[in-house]
Image 1 (cartoon, rainbow, N blue to C red):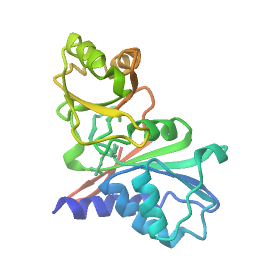
Image 2 (cartoon, rainbow, N blue to C red; image 1 turned 135 degrees about the vertical axis):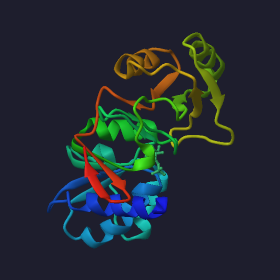
Image 3 (cartoon, rainbow, N blue to C red; image 1 turned 180 degrees about the vertical axis):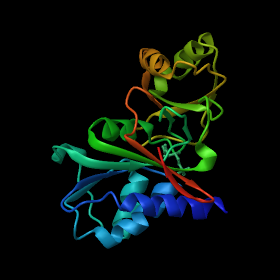
Length: 217
Ligand code: 5RP
């Protein structure tokens, strides 16, 4: 079955987690795009929506769903987002779309985090997908050198600036056998804003679309 169809199916499955008067956080990416499409039918039932990126904010506005700032929200009830890789422990690599920092802020501050992926994202060990790291522009070379020291091969993401006006280094070759420790270690490098490992805080639920249906992890 085509990937797009699987993305649509898993996004539709996530709509069932919406309850009346919820404040909902919305991730970024092509899978989430299908969730936004479905969310327009729920817009009168939900209380507020927070977006993890300008791209998502625009998509929500296009379907008539007003977006509120994170600063005006006390608690997010439900956060729905995709991922680039998911391991059997529900640890993730995210940031393919470059929105990792805002995504992590929302994920950490949500009562329930549901990750929606198609089966191509499921791996035994994280790291085939290059790990995105958001970096303050002036620290680009310093951080790149530190990443090489850790065994990584950082690649500057050309022609890309994050919504926070920073750059992204996509890092190949890191040993991600201990994702929780590595997530913390990377954050200690001065100049790193955040990294795409979501291992310290994982989703409660991962919905995986396969050719024979949706599996809940
Ligand atoms: C954006 C992300 C996305 O969730 C991730 O890249 C998956 O995107 P897609 O659903 O398009 O495959 O982390 O920063």
